[in-house]
Length: 385
Image (cartoon, helix red, strand yellow):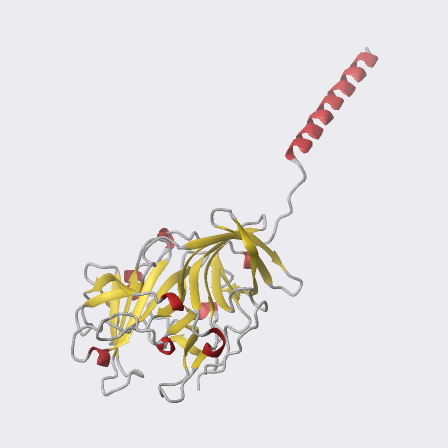
């Protein structure tokens, strides 16, 4: 009797062990988990290739898009991109009918930004011994292998907005304002770009997380914040045609103004998801120092678009139809779903003011990448003089 019970128990144990072994074999070895950069999966990122005209002959380009990281060590991006030599045009996105002293004019963006992303990559990422984020793009959006993989090597800053956001930057994105930006050699930051900035969180990248123009003007979480950042830009060294050259400079993005406080506030548009402001006492030349600014929602996802121009350039007309500053933007949203600012690009093609057509005056171009963010994201800006 005892021998029968023991024999049956051993048989059951052997069967259980066989089942566990079969399950483990079928499942295969456990995969290692790759930590997300800064603990964040979803990013908005601006990158570009910006160089001295003497070296690249005005072949600057900028790119704006989304990065999505996985704990399996893979990463994907979808992006919009513009190249100076292709002379992208300004196109109407909506009409700003804001009333007050704000001119009723088209709000323009760069051609292509209202449509789907123009490209994408697939790749892998890893963390280096010195704490950098190394991204290697190996295939296009469809999975077709690239002829040569391209790389990015980012500095990661964590703990922003009480841990609800993180940042990635190229080595010399931040620094002093002026005309002598340190341009990284090829490969120091990337094999194809030389400047970049991005912000990540675990909030989805869809339209449902995007703050509306109405919120930016009326919500006290947002309307009193002076969003500021750095703007790295390929431009002319001066306004003097006799001595100027094509350089890479660094300026400030945003300013000490806010959207919804004070006596001279931004005004919401009627009928379009946008707002406008007649900014007084700017650096515009001439006796009229007012600058016209517009900001609007466009397309899906986190997209916004900005445009500004000096009112004096309109020469008495209500709108300026030529060489405005168009800036595609992507909103930064933290883990709690709160808006924290933007990353963006500028793709400025100079046009003939008589024909409205690109005139090939490359030195007049303005091509750059920037962030424009809340104080909670701690942009590394130079001290105020």
